[in-house]
Image 1 (cartoon, one colour):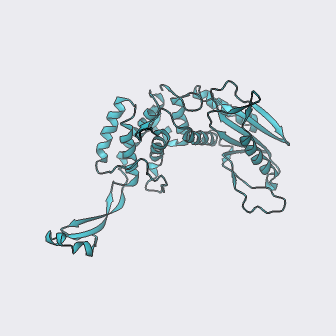
Image 2 (cartoon, one colour):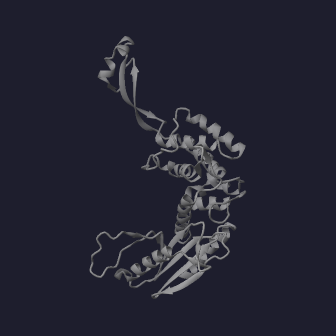
Image 3 (cartoon, one colour):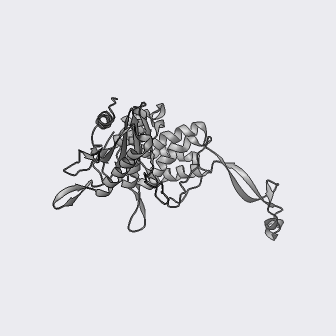
Length: 356
């Protein structure tokens, strides 16, 4: 599928970025997207451009989504509501027109504006020339759609039955604009070759969650809320504990805390050491869930699962802490995706006793 990208973690083949996205968005496994996995890409922007090209082409066959947008303009015939004050102005009376406000069922919807803005942005990126041609052809269908300021887009979007087909497209737009867009020192913007760590972390976490949910249907996969176990019942002002990933199978519960960092260890007295805050967090999750009376019949363990870095020493340890197993491992993403899957399968087998 082409080159590798380098974020703060180890080199990740772009093909693996696609596979991670395909777990996060199952629609990418459907017929219209399947050949993406076999194509060549220079960088992540190139990959995102191809996904958008295919997704927007499919959406155009369905028809671009529309929404009612209020418009106010001078008209010769009454439409909607008359704006009395504006209509009485001398310039309007001389034209024998009425100022009317009405709802227009328009393709200039907010979701279409996000997509057009992203496609225009991708035209400035280092992507394949043929993909730029395809983007320009698609933009013809967005002639009545306005652009947005990339820095002020409202991503708090409510999805419903009529716009569900846009969910993946908007997520890819978000990844391009939020994960790839960078403001330079002179105030201009450019697209980076790699996704920034913050957004890569979200993709990494979602990928692991969805991998286990889709590949291991017998495992209960959720982001469990963990209650504080307090002796006197007083838990006012205690924050909620929400695990990244919780796997339950048989009498086993594995809490996974997914971490995507540039560096896994720090140096203390010339020796590499794990981050104490991350260990405190997973230990707290495990001990509080283990002490929950409703979980008495379960064996609870924890796993800090770091994305592999280029550090010389990668952690692969299991500790027995106050009666519970706490493991710290890395997931190597710089390999064929079948090997990535094998690593995740091995975790399920070792911790839950289930084979893929």
